[in-house]
Image (cartoon, rainbow, N blue to C red; front, top):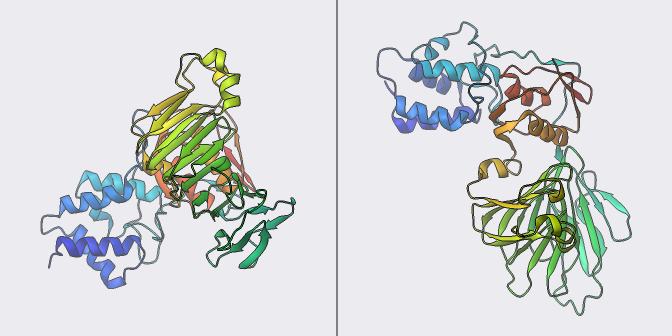
Length: 410
């Protein structure tokens, strides 16, 4: 008996979460490959698209490898429609998706797909790792620190929660508060961490990043400094504006959600607004240094939700405006790191490998010229390096892993 649309969707979602029983898996396979009735093509297409959206590399540059699957009863499923042939080809290369162990083409006893990535020792993904630098320059390694109270900084108590989050709490009666005391939270390559500031604002810090902040906000404004990438959910306080300084950029907000991408080894800084309103501009010293070159150009903009400000890291070396607006950035791509994903949309091999270097704490080496073209794809960040690289190797770019080095072969 054919499954209803709702039953098919429920079974499918159980499968990609690796929660199907063998009986449920057999029912799903039977439904997708049943030859005696019309397939629920619209439903199936939507399900596959939602899962594999972005796995195809851009046309005219790379193609997926030929379909090569073991002879299992499931193979006929992909010979019914050309659409499934393509999905099967992608699935045979990318075995990893979320917490699912294998894709629909897995067999009971045999893993599908093989990799040509040469691996001497695979590399673990990053995790919750960070160092807290206190006001006296002493340090606390947070990934090995016990949960509970870590320190007293000024009037604030610093604690590490059970879920690995760093938080600052202030006494109900604060008095004058005295001079502000500053801390720095720094993630290494291969690390990430979450922080709750003393005003209740939340910060997600990406790999190879740092945030410097006061342990209380006694003045007329709240000001922090970011180096690298962070996502912020700022607690609303109309009487006390929140300012973020990131290399050559300053962001001013009252209460909003936004992403700051300001790595020093990148040519641009990107401020992406998710909700609320922010004003993005050049910091005074930065603007002064580039005044002669940037005269008549935009020096600040107010973003609306869904917009992105792009700031040239060094406006003195380019003829382009130091500050432009992208009115329709790919928000899924911007926030992928926070959601535990790599998400590449028209990305160059160089930009992909920079993310790989930061997250896996590796060195990337090119044996020959850097491969040209652009890539699309999604894959979880919690997989081994060899699995992550399959998304690029599907296009014909080959790698080998030697200890903490990823080598892109000729």
